[in-house]
Image (cartoon, rainbow, N blue to C red; front, top):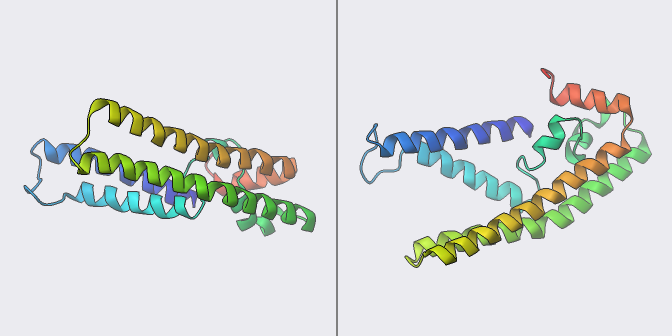
Length: 175
């Protein structure tokens, strides 16, 4: 999943840079979507699917990179980490609790993003409405991100130092 997040983030950035360059007269066919736009849209579509499913799409990346593993990836690596039965039950419970909290918060984020897009689509965008819509999007995003970050904190507490090192080596072999 982390590799997918990195690739998706890179695609989003590349799409934005490509779209900017093409809008400045560098290879964009008037009226046709650019490769950058298409890649960006694909990344956004994946973001929506992942968030709708309750997963974080990199929202807890800062924690994961620094040795705070998430429950989903711990379960994916349970054999390598040598989780005991009690740890597996507790991590699985954390995962389900995270998903139960993340799904409605993710839906709220996606709804807020849709409302922001509709402002522009309807041709009714004006500064105060855009400010309010962006504030709503960012509030929803921060609440969802917090769910994922706190799950990483809780998961880390369930692992031994040896398991944490094994996790980090598996997920971040070059660090």
